[in-house]
Amino acid sequence: MKAILKHTDEKLNCGKIVSVRGSVIDARFDHSLPAVYALLHAGEQREIAIEVLSQLDERTVRGIALTPTQGLARGMQIETDGNELMVPVGERTLGRMFDVFGNTIDHLKPLAEGEKRNVHQSPPPLDKRATNSQVFETGIKAIDVLIPLERGGKAGLFGGAGVGKTVLLTEMIHNMVGQNKGVSMFCGIGERCREGNELYEAMKDAGLLKNMIMMFGQMNELPGARFRVGHAALTMAEYFRDDEHKDVLLLIDNIFRFIQAGMEVSGLMGQMPSRLGYQPTLETELSALEERIANTDAGAITSIQAVYVPADDLTDPAAVHAFSHLSATIVLSRERASEGLYPSIDFLQSNSKMATPGIIGDRHYQLAQQIRQTLAQYEDLKDIISMLGMEQLSTGDRLVVNRARRLERFLTQPFFATEQFSGVKGEVVSLKDALDGCERILADEFKDLPENAFYMIGNIDEAIKNKGVNKDGPVATKPVIK
Image 1 (cartoon, rainbow, N blue to C red):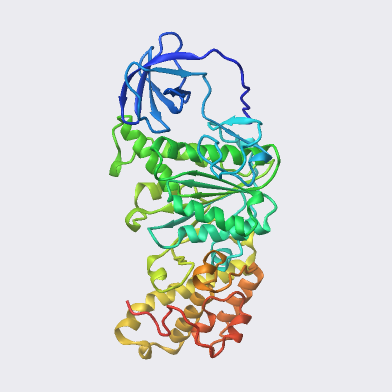
Image 2 (tube, rainbow, N blue to C red):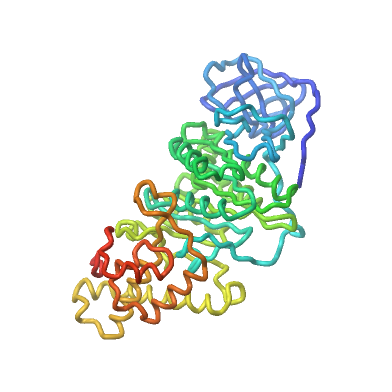
C-alpha cells in the first residue's frame, strides 16, 4: 500500500510531438514507450506537463495536458523520466495549500525537502479494513440526530446550486478540526477560486490551519488537472492514516466536478459517450477514487463530499453513481432554503446506514423514527392546510403540525461559517442536548411557546429565554402554503 517511489538518476527518455489538438498530445518514442500514467514534459523550460492515458501503437502514446499547452508544436522534443505524477507527503505539508503537482500556492516559504509519493495508489485490501462501525459526531443537530455519520465512512451532501453545500462543509471543518485531534484534508475540485481563498483565510483566522492541508484544482484549470487533484489529495491523506496512524477527515468540494472533468477528458480522448453525455468509464473512475477512502487497522479516512446535482435531478447518472459509494446521504432542499430553514436538509430523502438500534442505541433510534414520522405526517397535511386551512384539521393533526413546525425550527442552527453575514454567533450542539430537545418538543412540553423561539438556537433552553421575543428571520409564523 505504501508504494514509496525512490528517486533515481534514470536516463531521460526523449521523443517527438507528432500532433497537438488542444489538450490532447500525441508523441512518438523510438526506443522505449512510456507506460500509461507516466508524466511527460515539454516546452523550453519543461514547464508543460502531460500525462499518458493510452498507447496508440508500439511507438506512439496519447496524453492529456495538465498545464496550458501554448507554444507546443509538432516536431518539438518531449521527455520523461518514467515517473508518474507525485506529491509531497508528511508533517511538512500541514498548514499549507497545494496545487495538483504538490507545489505550494499560499505565497509562504518553500516546502522543505522530503518524501514524495505517486498519486496512483491501490485501495487497501479487504483484510486490512476495519469491520466495526462507529458514529462520527459533527456538532450539527440535524445531522447527528437524523443522519449520523460513520467514522471511516463516506457522506454525501447532495444539492443543486445555491442551497448551502459549501457552507455546510465549511461548518463541519470548523467544528471537527476544532474538536478532532486528527488531520483534516480539504480538496477543492473545480470550484471557484474565490471560495478557496475565503476558506483559507477563515481557517487561518480561526487558528485551525496547523492541523489542516488544502489542495485545489479550480475551475479555471485544465480538465486533466481537475481529474487528478482528488487522487493527489488522497495520497497525502493516506500517509497520515497508514504511516502516522491518525484519523483523517477528508472534505471534497465537489465530487461532481471530478466526474465532469473525467467526462471532458473522455471526450478529448475521443471515447464514445454513454447516457446523457457521461463517459463510459464513469463507475470505474469514481470507484478508483472512492475505494481508497476506508477505515483500516492503522486509522480511518472519513470523507464528506459535496455532490452538485444537475437541475436538482437525483436520477442524474452522476448522482446515482455517487449514491452507491456512500454510507450517509444528506439531501439539501431548495424549498427549505427558500423558507430560511438552514441547514436546508430534506430529512425525508436523507438517510444513513448508521441509523440502526445496534449502532446508535434504542433511545436515539426510536426518537429519530418518531421525528421522521411526525415530519412525514406534516408533509401529507400541507395540501389540506393550503386548501382548507388549519381550522379543518382534527385536534390530533393540529398537534402533529405544531410539533413538526417546532422540530423544523429547532433543527436549524446558527453556523460559525455565516457569523459575518448573519451577526448570530455560531454554536456546536452535543448529541445529548439535541436528543433532549427533540424529545421534549415531541412530548408537547413547549406547545405554548411561539414557533420562532426555536429558530436558530443551540440547545432547547435557549427557546425558553426567547419566549415572547420576535426573532428576525425569514420563517413564516403560520404553515407555509404551497
